[in-house]
Length: 326
Image (tube, rainbow, N blue to C red; front, side, top):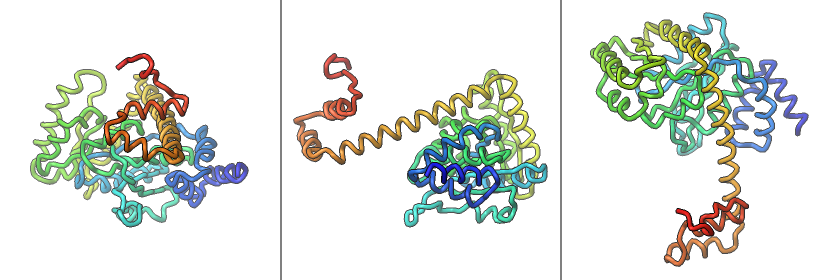
């Protein structure tokens, strides 16, 4: 298996798109060989520029992504996209299928687009999104874009996966103001008001700029770009601002801090996943598990006591029972 995985990695390095697609599928499915595959690819990653595109539904994120792909391919750059969609309740796969919306790029060998279902994950990203981006990075893509599912303020996970976060809004309605108040304001490195040909675009820009005065008193001040992706207007300016932010990350040291946070997040993700699996094995194999739950239900035991028993069995006792600490 080790030799097979090594050959698989070589195929990915050589630009084999089928091997790349298969690798992302195996990681998404948490296949047995996924950990070894990621381990071998890890030293090859770290060169791509990772960009997150988030925002509420209907603002035109996929249209913006499509136009960014066109722009970057015109510059000769290889582009990878992980488009996270709601999960189909029937197949477990991505429901919307951004590859359909970006069909013009399907035959371009310099573009790889993968739709990925959330599979119940909150935060706007699928569980395997970060690993898929790392695989595309290791495969030699210059820019990797993560387009989130589009659920408003719950998309905050994107900040842990990318170098630059672009928040897309539209002038229609007042939902954008509510979303900014809900906390997504703090994660934006760049704002783009898409569909700027609609009434109210200028007012939306002014509202964002006023809020920025309160949230970003120093350091990087997120620019606000007006765009009409359907016409291709404003996309080049948007990318110029992204590159300006990339330079800021490099010069200020913030880029390294973000990379370290990403690595911390990757390590802790794996720790929590293994711990969860260990707990599930313990409960599945415990002959009196149902009886323990019955005792909790009837008030004869409390959840903390049962949790402490599980931790002791796993060699991870918190010591609360002995010390009396709250």
